[in-house]
Length: 157
Image (cartoon, rainbow, N blue to C red):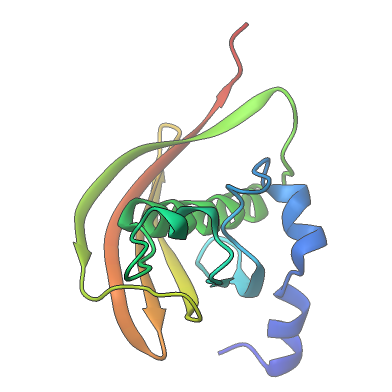
Protein backbone atom coordinates (compact mmCIF):
# COMPACT_ATOMS: atom_id res chain seq x y z
CA UNK A 1 0.00 0.00 0.00
CA UNK A 2 1.50 3.36 -1.02
CA UNK A 3 2.28 5.85 1.70
CA UNK A 4 0.36 9.11 1.95
CA UNK A 5 3.37 10.90 0.45
CA UNK A 6 3.48 8.49 -2.54
CA UNK A 7 -0.25 8.98 -3.15
CA UNK A 8 0.20 12.75 -3.08
CA UNK A 9 2.99 12.46 -5.65
CA UNK A 10 0.64 10.55 -7.95
CA UNK A 11 -2.26 12.97 -7.48
CA UNK A 12 -3.03 15.39 -10.33
CA UNK A 13 -4.76 18.76 -10.37
CA UNK A 14 -6.80 20.05 -13.31
CA UNK A 15 -3.77 21.68 -14.94
CA UNK A 16 -1.95 18.35 -15.19
CA UNK A 17 -5.12 16.52 -16.27
CA UNK A 18 -5.40 18.94 -19.21
CA UNK A 19 -1.98 17.74 -20.37
CA UNK A 20 -3.24 14.15 -20.54
CA UNK A 21 -6.79 14.53 -21.86
CA UNK A 22 -7.75 16.41 -25.03
CA UNK A 23 -11.29 16.97 -23.69
CA UNK A 24 -12.40 20.48 -22.75
CA UNK A 25 -15.58 22.05 -21.39
CA UNK A 26 -18.29 20.84 -21.46
CA UNK A 27 -16.90 17.34 -22.05
CA UNK A 28 -13.99 17.19 -19.61
CA UNK A 29 -15.41 15.00 -16.85
CA UNK A 30 -12.42 14.54 -14.52
CA UNK A 31 -11.71 17.37 -12.06
CA UNK A 32 -8.90 15.80 -10.02
CA UNK A 33 -6.88 12.61 -9.77
CA UNK A 34 -6.65 11.51 -6.14
CA UNK A 35 -4.18 8.69 -6.77
CA UNK A 36 -2.66 6.90 -9.72
CA UNK A 37 -0.51 3.78 -9.67
CA UNK A 38 0.62 3.44 -13.32
CA UNK A 39 -0.01 -0.01 -14.72
CA UNK A 40 -2.46 -0.77 -11.92
CA UNK A 41 -5.23 1.67 -10.96
CA UNK A 42 -6.47 5.23 -10.67
CA UNK A 43 -8.91 7.05 -8.41
CA UNK A 44 -10.27 10.36 -9.69
CA UNK A 45 -13.19 12.64 -8.98
CA UNK A 46 -15.85 14.62 -10.78
CA UNK A 47 -17.72 17.30 -8.87
CA UNK A 48 -21.28 17.21 -10.16
CA UNK A 49 -22.81 20.69 -10.00
CA UNK A 50 -26.22 22.06 -10.93
CA UNK A 51 -24.40 24.16 -13.55
CA UNK A 52 -23.72 21.10 -15.73
CA UNK A 53 -25.21 21.77 -19.18
CA UNK A 54 -27.08 18.43 -19.30
CA UNK A 55 -29.14 19.13 -16.17
CA UNK A 56 -31.42 21.64 -17.93
CA UNK A 57 -32.84 18.80 -20.02
CA UNK A 58 -32.14 15.64 -17.97
CA UNK A 59 -34.48 16.13 -16.15
CA UNK A 60 -35.68 19.66 -15.36
CA UNK A 61 -37.92 18.45 -12.52
CA UNK A 62 -35.31 16.01 -11.10
CA UNK A 63 -31.72 16.64 -12.30
CA UNK A 64 -29.91 13.32 -12.86
CA UNK A 65 -26.48 12.84 -14.50
CA UNK A 66 -26.91 10.71 -17.65
CA UNK A 67 -25.46 7.22 -17.30
CA UNK A 68 -23.56 7.54 -20.56
CA UNK A 69 -21.68 10.52 -19.09
CA UNK A 70 -20.78 8.53 -15.98
CA UNK A 71 -19.34 5.86 -18.29
CA UNK A 72 -17.49 8.58 -20.23
CA UNK A 73 -16.03 9.95 -16.99
CA UNK A 74 -14.80 6.45 -16.13
CA UNK A 75 -13.27 6.13 -19.62
CA UNK A 76 -11.50 9.47 -19.19
CA UNK A 77 -10.02 8.31 -15.88
CA UNK A 78 -8.92 5.07 -17.58
CA UNK A 79 -7.32 7.12 -20.38
CA UNK A 80 -5.25 9.04 -17.84
CA UNK A 81 -4.15 5.72 -16.29
CA UNK A 82 -3.11 4.38 -19.69
CA UNK A 83 -1.22 7.52 -20.65
CA UNK A 84 0.55 7.63 -17.28
CA UNK A 85 1.42 3.93 -17.70
CA UNK A 86 2.84 4.62 -21.19
CA UNK A 87 4.57 7.78 -19.92
CA UNK A 88 2.80 9.77 -22.68
CA UNK A 89 0.75 12.94 -22.84
CA UNK A 90 -1.97 13.78 -25.32
CA UNK A 91 -0.90 15.13 -28.69
CA UNK A 92 -2.44 16.20 -31.99
CA UNK A 93 -1.48 12.97 -33.78
CA UNK A 94 -3.35 10.34 -31.81
CA UNK A 95 -6.74 9.72 -30.25
CA UNK A 96 -7.62 7.45 -27.35
CA UNK A 97 -10.84 5.70 -28.41
CA UNK A 98 -13.46 3.98 -26.35
CA UNK A 99 -14.03 0.58 -28.09
CA UNK A 100 -16.22 -1.46 -25.77
CA UNK A 101 -18.39 -1.69 -22.68
CA UNK A 102 -19.23 -4.91 -20.89
CA UNK A 103 -21.70 -5.50 -18.08
CA UNK A 104 -22.56 -1.85 -17.42
CA UNK A 105 -24.81 -1.51 -14.40
CA UNK A 106 -26.39 1.63 -12.99
CA UNK A 107 -27.23 1.12 -9.34
CA UNK A 108 -28.48 4.58 -8.28
CA UNK A 109 -28.83 8.06 -9.76
CA UNK A 110 -26.12 10.71 -9.56
CA UNK A 111 -27.53 14.13 -8.72
CA UNK A 112 -26.35 17.72 -8.57
CA UNK A 113 -24.15 18.23 -5.52
CA UNK A 114 -22.70 14.71 -5.60
CA UNK A 115 -18.98 14.06 -5.71
CA UNK A 116 -18.46 11.19 -8.15
CA UNK A 117 -15.42 9.05 -7.29
CA UNK A 118 -14.11 7.30 -10.41
CA UNK A 119 -12.07 4.11 -10.04
CA UNK A 120 -10.42 2.12 -12.82
CA UNK A 121 -8.23 -0.96 -12.48
CA UNK A 122 -6.17 -2.13 -15.43
CA UNK A 123 -7.05 -5.74 -16.19
CA UNK A 124 -4.86 -6.33 -19.24
CA UNK A 125 -3.35 -4.85 -22.37
CA UNK A 126 -3.05 -6.89 -25.53
CA UNK A 127 -2.55 -5.96 -29.18
CA UNK A 128 -3.25 -2.31 -28.49
CA UNK A 129 -6.48 -2.87 -26.55
CA UNK A 130 -6.58 -1.89 -22.88
CA UNK A 131 -9.20 -3.49 -20.65
CA UNK A 132 -10.33 -2.08 -17.29
CA UNK A 133 -12.75 -2.88 -14.53
CA UNK A 134 -14.32 0.39 -13.41
CA UNK A 135 -16.76 1.69 -10.86
CA UNK A 136 -18.14 5.05 -9.83
CA UNK A 137 -19.12 5.80 -6.25
CA UNK A 138 -20.93 8.54 -4.35
CA UNK A 139 -20.43 8.66 -0.58
CA UNK A 140 -18.81 5.21 -0.67
CA UNK A 141 -21.79 3.62 -2.44
CA UNK A 142 -21.41 2.15 -5.92
CA UNK A 143 -23.52 3.99 -8.51
CA UNK A 144 -22.10 2.47 -11.70
CA UNK A 145 -19.93 -0.51 -12.64
CA UNK A 146 -18.62 -1.52 -16.07
CA UNK A 147 -15.85 -3.28 -17.93
CA UNK A 148 -14.33 -0.85 -20.44
CA UNK A 149 -12.03 -1.34 -23.43
CA UNK A 150 -10.03 1.42 -25.10
CA UNK A 151 -7.32 1.81 -27.72
CA UNK A 152 -4.91 4.46 -28.97
CA UNK A 153 -4.93 5.18 -32.70
CA UNK A 154 -3.28 7.69 -34.96
CA UNK A 155 -5.54 10.36 -36.42
CA UNK A 156 -6.54 9.82 -40.02
CA UNK A 157 -6.74 12.79 -42.34
